[in-house]
Amino acid sequence: MSQVRDLIALIKPRITLMVVATGAVGLYLAPTTPKPETKLGLLLGMSLLVGGANALNMYLERDIDGRAERTKDRPLPAGRLEPKIALALSLSLGLLALLWLGLIVNLLTAVLGLVAFVSYTACYTPMKQISPGALVIGAVPGAMPPLMGWTAATGRLDLAGLTLFSIMFLWQLPHFIAIALFRSEDYRRAGFKTLVSELGERTAKFQVVLYLLLLCPVSLLLVPMGIGGRLYLWTALVAGIGFLLIGLQGLRASSGIRWARTLFKASLLYLMVVFGAMLAGHALQDGDQSSLYAIGQHAS
Image 1: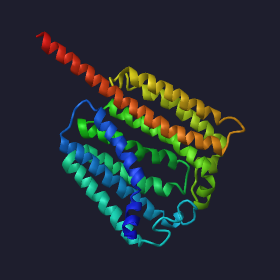
Image 2: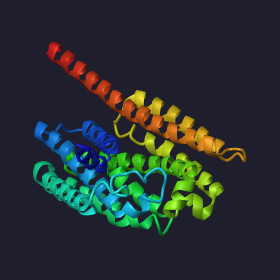
Image 3: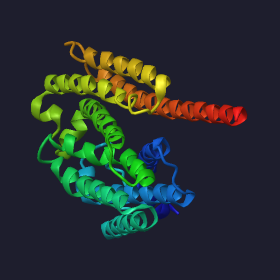
Image 4: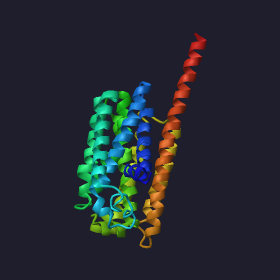
């Protein structure tokens, strides 16, 4: 039973659930409604893909995880699982996911899934020990799920889908800089080259502000594309300004770990509020359209 728990821990269920949820947002916001089997196919395929990528990441970083206090009790560094089991599980899940997405959803979504899997495991994971540029590389697979949800429904790449990708991409950068700030000692022991360790806290804080200055206007681009309506417009604007104000507080000389933790919590709240407003605004738009259609039918 304990081995089953360790196998489940390899796929990082909470992270997998969060990632799949962002993919579901892209699926729901798309202008076309896919078949039920396509919806279920995407969610299952994405769950397998993310779980496989997480397991492969833990396999590749098993020695590194043993150096950090936060990760030393994971199944592989603690010796509770054989590394070959984790490798077999990760590759099996990844291959099954890509085949599933290609056959059940569509080829474009499978290709995006492949890009996400490879960029996370073959690029981002080893690059963390080489360059702080891993931060930007790692944001690519993290931003892919809502775009995959969009392409699963539409079968194409377009500006709206790429805007969803851009919002997730920009959101991750201050989110992970915040983590690097309050876990800097753990990351140093693990040998990770973060923005904080290589370029200093002040540079990292300025980059937080830069990314937040970009995030707010980019998030509003969805409105002229017909996504979210007024509810989303005002929610995204207020949330974006609030997030930026918290980021600006980091430029004070007195800001430290406490501020970094506040920024981290604010990033999670921002994502939930903004994505929630997207979904609610979309539902209201659909309701308005349905009401207009019913009125037209009654008049005719």
